[in-house]
Image (cartoon, rainbow, N blue to C red; front, top):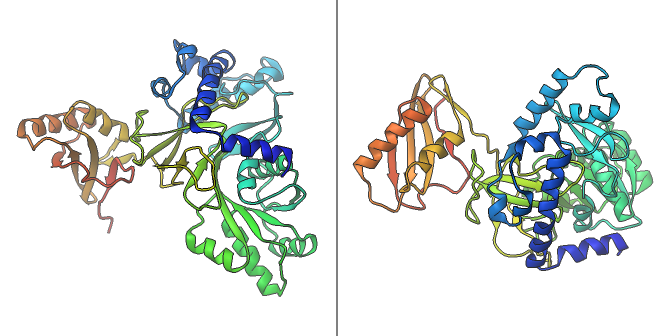
Length: 432
């Protein structure tokens, strides 16, 4: 094991108490750093005493910043900017909407783009995206050659994997996307130990190799991401001699969580603090309940504080059987943005939670939209430990109209009646 891989292992296997102590000792410094050096977070966290944000309870009081706000700020700063005004050092604040904490130059090595268009910085530190941990868990080792089929232009995926591989001591063939026959030829001639890329492209390469009559015996492992890799496809890879592992990462945050040989959920990375909140709010949900994944990054270049990923997940109880002690999540379970148009009006998950919070009797709420198009029926299904009370139901009905400007009925349910799937708004309409 290389020195770098050994450092990763030490951090992964420390006690959760030690990890939380270290992370929440670093968090006030990160928040102060963001307030001082990030124009966006100076505004978002205005009035926050960074020194007091030293535990999960205090962190949960801070506002959630979602990707839509990041995009809006980037678009507005670019629109307001005058060509050349302020020079290149100030240009980074324009490009990144003020969410960055360092200017172009030594602190920011590359700029990437994601659909939207949203721009993200790549810092100059070793393993900036923290992908080495995921690769190591997938069995990649120093001295091996990795075939990297992620894109190297516009989006950061290729660089994310390459920098992680280099940190582990691996050599990388920058294959990029497309050119399937050439990919097969390169694999046959270079004999890489493993593949990184999307699972669908790996299957395309293996199918093409079979069609060409080319054997790829060196390829025994893969790190796949960017799309779903269901158990059926993982089993198919195994039948072809490849042990495939998944990781969950974004261009904004880098690595968030990764799969291990235990195949029991994804272990959260050491460089982030993860919360699961009720969609449309910043309120943490009980352990095991599905909600939106909110991530606080300890990255000094791009210090995203309580960044809402828009993805649904849930915490798994207990520790990973491999000895890694950090929190585990179930992985991607859908999207948290459930905004739905009802009778010509948009209804948001946050509005459903606003209604529920007005009534202490309500433990959980789910808005179900049924009927056929142009004949929408809106029902708020609420869980309560109390027996149904007509006066409370009438008040909730009034609150529905007050908050959404639409009429809706109320269905009273016992605790545990609603599914644990993170849905706050369920669109059950018929579109035939």
